[in-house]
Image 1 (cartoon, helix red, strand yellow):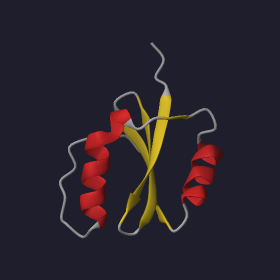
Image 2: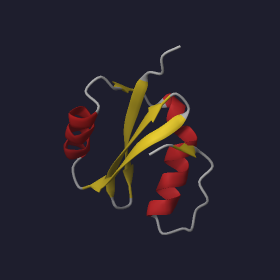
Image 3: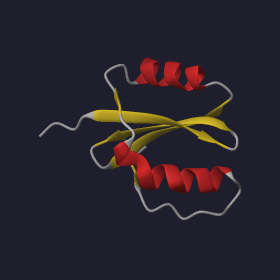
Length: 81
């Protein structure tokens, strides 16, 4: 079965962040930018077929927001960069 590429964009204390997943693996983190549109443009450039979704990212968003708030964080999700 083919893995679909999905993404979401969310606010952090440092700006807008983007994450991209293929299957269960997180394949890209776009570091915070001041404008949401900048993150969206980067995701569209590198992953033009990616579908925006929010629901599969609850744990990743929670952990990344904690990390970008300055809290030492052990990530529980799969990274496949």
